[in-house]
Length: 357
Image (cartoon, rainbow, N blue to C red; front, side):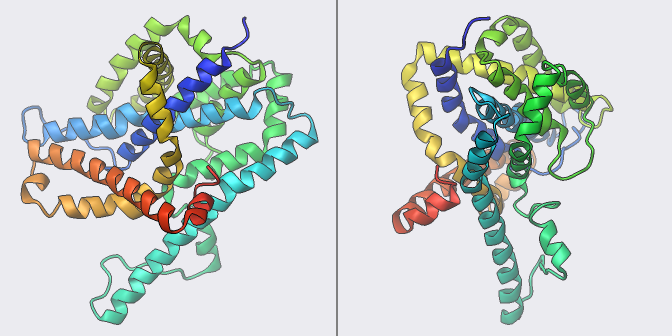
């Protein structure tokens, strides 16, 4: 196989990061999967649209981030050398560990302060928050991450710490370790240990295998692009209709594989036809980590509070669909505004919160 066109793949990945973080925001606009009501009812349209935009289309985002991280973690790096591991760990302290601890701590302080202020002012708190033990405090930093999207950072830190072992596993098995991981991934099996998710391990190691061999993922995907595209389109539009079905997770994970491949090819196509679009998307990269860390705990609830004050937007049917889309738009607007304010008044703090990005 030919050597990778690194600049082409790198450009595609750089341009994809911002659309992927938009997908992460979309995932968190609604919480649990919804079951579609009977066709023709007023709530059917809202349920299908919100399921499609929150629980179907964007589900490729986090697995793709793991894949990208694995690829670049192992690309042209011999993790068999202790010096490589040491350098990578030091780098991850700044880019992952410090922001992870800070964002979780900030939100814990906000929740505790909100409860205390409510009690002192005499109107109580609608959802009081207390920490009653040191074990409970620790759980908010690991088992039940208080800023719940940061479970990705938690798992990524574990993967980086295990980098030499994963590197040797891929080397000793010639990549065949990915086959049992693929099966576990497809059936949705999880060991239940925080930081050791099947999705994170499989996607990271898949990227790591290609990175170790210096294989361009775009060249591999080109061979199955039509099949992947057809399957991705078929599954993504069907998933909202399958909520509650026993085989949902398999279809869901097949979409993750084919949808991720298709997303890479679509961005490559856009890059060839409209290079200026790639450049504009790349320029938005500076916002990605901040949006990722801040959007759920600080911004989504504000957006919901504003939208739900408008009766039409909280009703069933088209009004609810518009309200759902406005929540996403307001969340992004708040994210950009917050970033701009912090950058102006405390740029060094912003750099630390963003992991030096």
